[in-house]
Image 1 (spheres, rainbow, N blue to C red):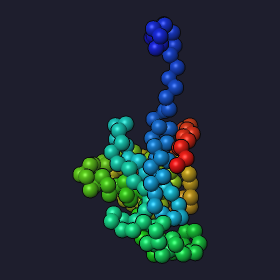
Image 2: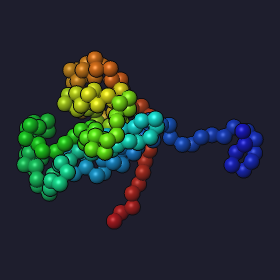
Image 3: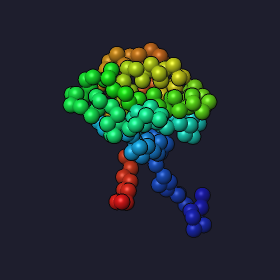
Image 4: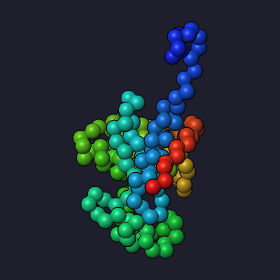
Length: 171
């Protein structure tokens, strides 16, 4: 095989592996999150192509969380409490509903998510036909959620690829 200069020999592929590539994209997507508490994103991939993205935040057409539309998030509720009062949708939910909104099947897809799914999102992932979830960070990942994903036929694994550093210019 020839290198870019036409020389024969082994060419080292410096590109990120697929998991690192899609997880890095998920970390960029989370920059759009409008929740004032936590920034999370999900990327749904099928045949190595992105079919949908989602980040946590308020529903379409509703004032952003960071603008004060969510009383739970703008209040002083401890982390993990009062979630039934939060009006924000999770990243996984938004990625799945974006696919549905645009008529794109998620059957057999892989989801890359910056934070492990909660129990409610696990149910949506199973029902959407997603077959694999790769998560980067862990937050209150319950045994019940792990067992449900496994029983539902969803492979769930922690991201072990390379984290790439991207620096954005200051505004």
